[in-house]
Image 1 (cartoon, helix red, strand yellow):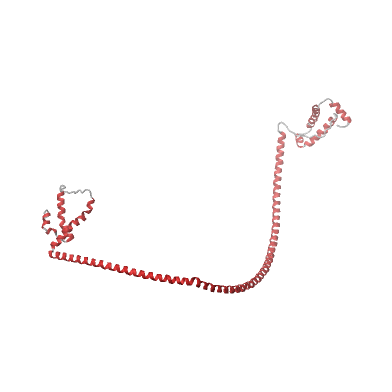
Image 2: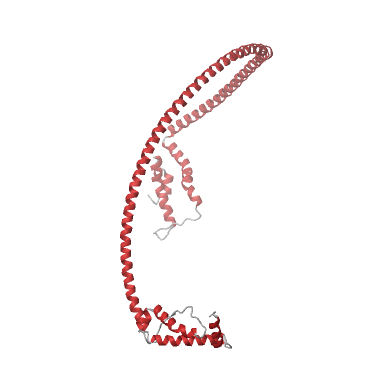
Length: 351
């Protein structure tokens, strides 16, 4: 304490002691009064009403520590506990009750809040719908009015534009008409100038090109006619030459044909005179040629093996082939070789 008398008492009690000693003295004093007050209260009173408990301790301990020159400015119960968890059990029950009441309160509050929120939303939606309806009506009316104004403006603009374009077209037509008249005058003058130029050019061409060209054409024509006559004469001479050669060749061919015909005539008369003997002679003359043609493929064969059932006698096979020869010749030419004595003798095996 700061009062002089109480400060003197404090000096008397604590002079020469350190801070920890002073703390211990005050703590022991408060603990003693705390125990004495605990004995007068129930556990539930201590646990449920800590402020009252702290107030009693402060009222009882304040005079004792005041006599030591110490003033209690603040005293608070930090915690109340026991070793058998009695207080915690009381707290759990109370906590459960409080939690239950809190849950019920929360649920009822949420229910009331939900109902109120739904009502508010409904009121908000109703107000919003009415506001949107009014906005839509206003917007539609605005758009209709705007369309009417735009249509009127467009009509006036189109009329003005059309009038402007018509007036511009009239002015362009006038300008074009003036330009056409100017072009006509210029064209007339140009035509006159061109006509004079044509006359001058024609005279110049006559003097410088046409007359020399006519002279050159006449010269070329004369040369061409002379060349033509020359070519005609050469062609006639060549044709006459070819004709003479053809006549000579025709005479030679005619003479050869007459000689061949005379030879054939004489030959025919000889055949007619000798009859079958002449025919036989022709056949015999032709047989070597026929045999050569028939045997031509065999010239490409290196070796011929003749197989026969008659003890492989080649002579008998040759005889058989010779015996069949007159029949083959008779079938081809109509000449019967078997009537010729020489042939009969050669093919005696058949006879």
